[in-house]
Length: 506
Image 1 (cartoon, one colour):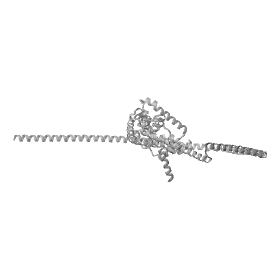
Image 2 (image 1 turned 180 degrees about the horizontal axis):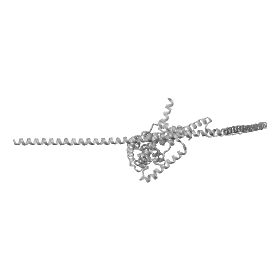
Image 3 (image 1 turned 90 degrees about the vertical axis):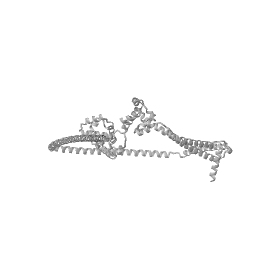
Image 4 (image 1 turned 180 degrees about the vertical axis):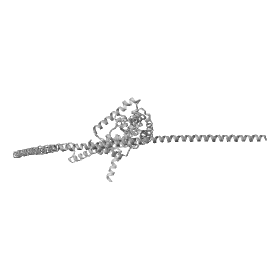
């Protein structure tokens, strides 16, 4: 019995302890829930307070804008009334002046009409003098033609026909004598060779055919040389393990620099490796900069006035500001030397803050500007469609023409001006030249691909060149000359002759 009561007491203690722990956990959970509710309520109050501040700021700005607009409207009305009064006064003064000067004006008009009539009379006199001069020149030409006709008549009358015939007969005799001499020389040459005159034609035809065959063979040889050169280029390109500048620059968008580097014998990316930035400037960047600046100067000389090309960069930046509704920052961007849309990608945080300070815009507009710049950097900004850009460019050209500048056609929109080296291109080039590890992985991958390809191509190439060797050997045997005796022909020549005879029989 004592053991029973002790176990019962222990059980009750455990249950009481569990109940206390459960109550304590419930109180802790309730306290945590209360703390979370208070934090949530505090966040709601802070959010509502922030919204209220923004609404007050917007309302304040709206009131300021309305007051400013009302003041501007009142000033405009005052200026309009003053202009109306000034216009009325000028009108009255003009009427009085017209009444006073009407007589003088009529006199001036009569004098002007008299001067015009005098000009017409003078012009008629000048025209009459010109006609008289033309008539005299025509009469002089007629007299000259008559004199020339008389000289020709005298030449015809004094022409010695019999003497001319004697001279021509002597020349014909000399030509016949020369022809007979040549005929005798040819007959003597044919007799010396032991041939007949009938074989000469055959020999000449054979010679002509030989010339044609030689020309054809030379043409085929030239074509074969070209194909072998192309084949060599293909094999060399397939066997090249190094990464080409052309391939890598095409991927990086730097392909306009490839021809410049090729002129200085820089073909592989290994040729661009530099120890530091100073070596990069001296060995690589200076070459590119000189060539690009020269191209730009030549283009400017050929296109001194092209409004579409001049305004293209400005139109892109203007379109960006208009699409993002941040046109108020245009002047600030221009003061900070941001004149092209591509310059926006190079803006850092300090530059953005300087532009915002220069613009003097409100907080909300500054947030919108920062958001637009970040979207352009992330590549999320999509420019307006090409058709809209062309329409803007056409409008710009029409406006320029109307103002009196040089007019351009729609073909000018297709002109591409060579651009200077941008800071982004310079950074990419510096990274490629001073940090070869950025492209070493691609070169290693290309090396593995080339080696695997050569393992597959080597047996095929070996078999190909063995067949070529056999074909060349057979050709040499066919072209071998062992004398005119038919028995001296080799086996390949005899087979070829038999094939020709069988083909003629068919």
